[in-house]
Amino acid sequence: MAKIKGTIVVDKEQCKGCEVCTTACQFKCIGMSKEVNGKGYRYAISVNDDCTGCTNCAIVCPDGVISVYRAKIDSQ
Image (cartoon, rainbow, N blue to C red; front, top):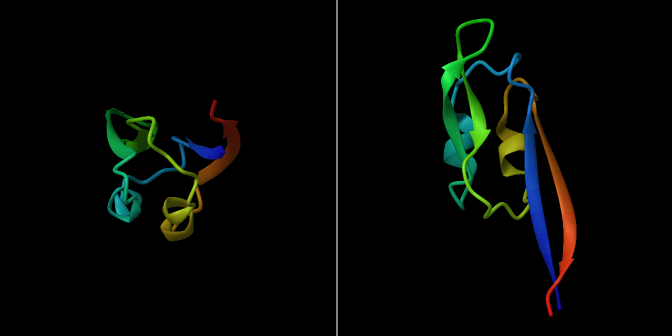
């Protein structure tokens, strides 16, 4: 049976650190960086490997800076 594995890519220079994505993620895969971007904002980062690629984070992002990728992983 194949499992869906997701991952996110955040445009950290465009992220304004609103944290809406962190509350939208049911698996708590997104957190905020300790560093700041060029605009002085802490930006969203992936914090664990539990992402399923549901796209909730990308849908709620007001600036559209999150891209979600999915891959099928064959379980043995």
